[in-house]
Image (cartoon, rainbow over all chains, first blue to last red):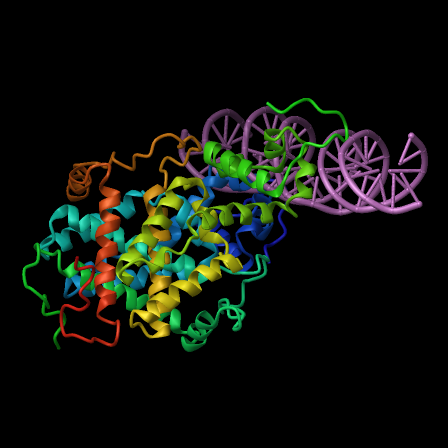
Length: 230
Length: 230
DNA sequence: TTGCCAAATCTTACGGCGTAAGTACACTGC
DNA sequence: GCAGTGTACTTACGCCGTAAGATTTGGCAA
């Protein structure tokens, strides 16, 4: 609980503190619960005070996205194989998104063109090029993976029953009519709650396998790259 | 221009007309320009009138998403190969999304669990199962493709320079510093404006190729499925 | 034809939003 | 001690979604 302060007394806020509180608030109560006023009172401060640290609400939202991007930033792409590197990156990115599911709509709708983010891409490109991808293909691969991760994270976390109180049940839609949609309900019952992760891995591997073929314009006919043989 | 009416006179609105006008408004001026008041005046009607046709703004937004889903609905998945079918579906879905880029954030953040949508999935599952996929794998494949398409559509259309006036330049970020990010800027210059579509196809094919291997638990060691040999 | 009703529309009002503008206070360096 | 600077608060404006109620209409029963 923030200590009682008198007019003009400092609260000791920083941009970072504001962003963290904002992220926490969104995680806890959803995007629509984030207003300058609510975030202010969360921090024991009036709404207008926040404008000392973020220039407006849009910048605040951009900041939230940035927080997430930064949390996955360390370019792990130097690890072992390019394939393992991409896999690690995809997993780290997915984990970061799933850790803050309420923010995903923001990630989707605003540009992640921070220079910090560009730096990550640059080093990833370097790794892929070294692994034998032509530069433009490397960019294709990178965009494909990020698009894929974002898309999956989004479809994994859409809450149905458009109520705003979906902050504590990670289960997905299970109440499909077994009469009307037999296959669908069967398939959903067949893949247990953890099935989403499996599905992600499954499709990711499929994509990586597909990439392999275009590495140096099909350097081997079928199975390429030794791939972490240990 | 809507004819001048007196109090209580009918405007002849329908839910469909409201949704269409809403979609048009969002396409033209962006999501943030859509308010009950603005949409009302668009239709020559007061804001509250709209509540006769949609129960609240959330339902209106759901309706916009539905409009898009419906436009891609006809299950083309019966066509020729399962692979060609999936490819067609992905292309149709992507086209529908790109036709209304401003709506993509909505598509991402709300459930597409209309029974109409479920019917599409059911028939797609049927096709895939007939093509040799175990049911749960078929669902994996389907989710993977939709997630992939949504993710790509999203990353293809994020506007940078978070201003709200990005409604008439489909170009993406091109002003990266060639000094600081040589590979990145080179790769972007290498892939021309139409490169996004190529990238999508490239990654889609990669994924489909990957799927092929899990069709009936690796039915052939390397190259499976004759695939539209005509 | 007349009378009535359900549906479509408009009016008013409320609380909450983002934020521009102005004010008050506490630190910092001289 | 004292000015300057930056942090925080207050007030106010115009927008938002929408609840409640008044008003008019078109269509149907008698």
